[in-house]
Length: 362
Image 1 (cartoon, rainbow, N blue to C red):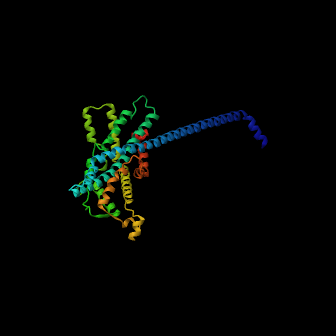
Image 2: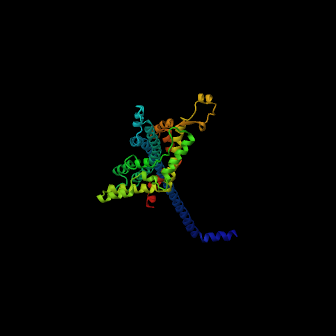
Image 3: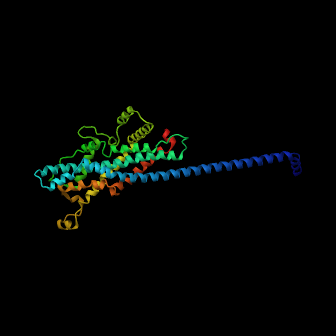
């Protein structure tokens, strides 16, 4: 058996040598090919990881810019609201002990509650709108800086950014702030009436219902209407002849309107308003908290639900809340809005959509 096998191997020795060389060579080439493929995969994964890390760093930096921009614009918003709803002149009149004191108090009641309500709405809108605008620009800037444009112009040059971001003036007072103030319908409450914190909560809930759902059959404006000039206003400018930068700005404005009409935006803004009015009432609640001396004297339990204040005492409290709501110094009110998880997720989604070329193509 061994003799026949050895004879077979001797007769076909050359074939086995060539076959072994072929197989060995093939294995060697396959090994080299596999190594090259593995190296390509590793290089691609490394490049993707670096790109993702760069994108993440740029996104986080952009969010810090968003926060600082919100804080920097709050004084302008506050000044616009105070200018339109000026209660300081009324408080000055009251100090002079006028004969129409009751009428001035009625006007002060309306202005105080209206401007605090408008401040909550406007601040929430500012937070969300700037998240949209700066993340759209941030996405485009990332593409401009990281992807070869083959000599084409950048999608968001500085002039376009400035022109685009100037549309925020529509919210900061040049646009529909007076109409938003007018839509805050106040219920008739006597100055002699005493209110609990629960009464105030229900009162502001009714005001929100009027603003967001309409009053006596009137169809309300969507909240996005107060945040940007409508498309007809933008399109009207096209008749005057547009430069290339104007066209790019209009494109950004239209993309922003698309975001403002999305269900995600409505959910995020609703969450901000809920948190904003909750924090606003928390601030007011501090003035309803009975002191230990009062609790011991009256024998009443130390609970906010048992405290009632005359409306004449509540008005100055509500009137002063605008300085906490629209404060450039990070307050609990602003910090609560900036730290809402839905706001962060929404900002990430906007940035993701505009920092990927294939997403923009969709």
